[in-house]
Length: 98
Image 1: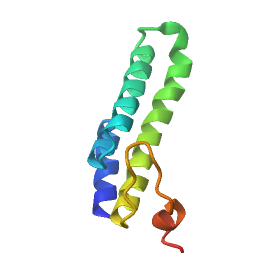
Image 2: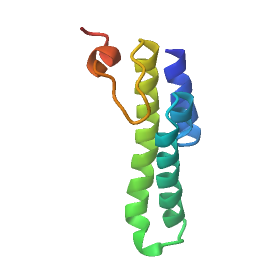
Image 3: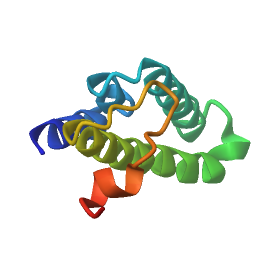
């Protein structure tokens, strides 16, 4: 549980950082890039997209935090996903049910 909480805390601060903690660098780069583009749009670099950028910014941040926590839990239970792949037993690894 400590790894999952640590990964979620890192992603709370910087989207994608929790994915790095979980050993998923490709996903981390993608999340950070999406967050940076949406953040630039939100700050006015692309004013026409401000409303959509706000939704994308929040959704990217929320996804990064939840994903970092869930993957951290899965890794703790021994089902270690490779970058970009999901383990076969995601439901049992996350929920603890067999």
